[in-house]
Each structure stands twice: as C-alpha cells, then as structure tokens.
Length: 87
Image 1 (cartoon, rainbow, N blue to C red):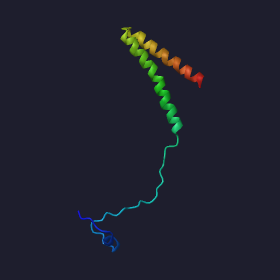
Image 2: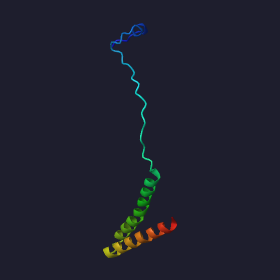
Image 3: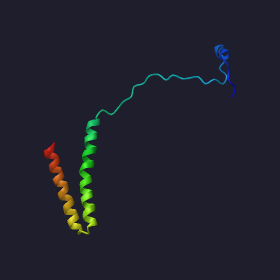
Image 4: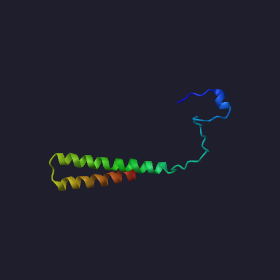
C-alpha cells in the first residue's frame, strides 16, 4: 500500500484513495408506548416471582401437590387483589 502525498490528492488523482461517503440525513421511527410496555413487564415479573418462589419452597418442603397448587393459586389471587387495590 503506497502512501500518497497531498499534491497527488489535489490534482484529482484518486488511485487507491478511500473517499469518505456522507450519508443523507434520515429519520428514525421509535416505539412511543414505552411506559405501558414497561408497566406490563414489571407487573408480570412481580406477579410471577412470588408464586414461583412459594411453589418452590413448598415443593422443597415435600408438601403434597394439592397444597402447592392451592397455595400458589391463593397467592396469585391475593396478589391480584393487592395490585388492584393499590393502583
């Protein structure tokens, strides 16, 4: 690869010279409902964490399946009521 001097560039010689291309301006379209999606993701995450932890804890304690299922459903109902009342 040869190094070219400034006079070569001024004379219009462009052999082996990479030219910088300037792209035209463009507009980007962004998702505008970020707060709603954020609230849904946080709500689902919060709503599923405790029931799974409760089910895992009861399963580890060798509780019968009916107890694990009943406790999980009770917690989901209690969490839904709590979230509904708390806003």
